[in-house]
Image (cartoon, rainbow, N blue to C red; front, side, top):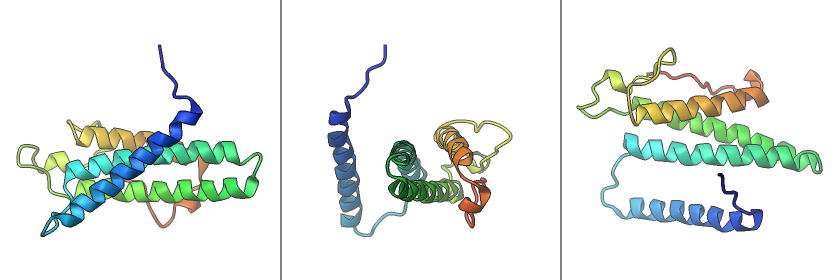
Length: 151
């Protein structure tokens, strides 16, 4: 059994997510000195951006038929958000992993599944979102950004 959130209840959840991001940003800027991003932080941020990516995908698809110009702008935002998500994924792999994970654990290997969390979750999430964006955009739309994992 699946539960659907009624459309009129969705906006408060989106507002709460935005408030959470604002609160997190304020909490980060209050610390002195500010700590650099770590892999867990980027994994959570990637999850948030991926959720926004899916939301923009849905909004652009439903807005385009009745309002083509607005739909094109939402589609452009969808592509740009994908590029930001790809950059977060790349940054994740460039950060050092913990000693327990080892150096090999930080690398993204598209030919095989990553060994465990958080690499497993971010790479699977990124791969799934990548399939969605590739069905709806051309390679030219995604330039100069790439969607490949690099170390």
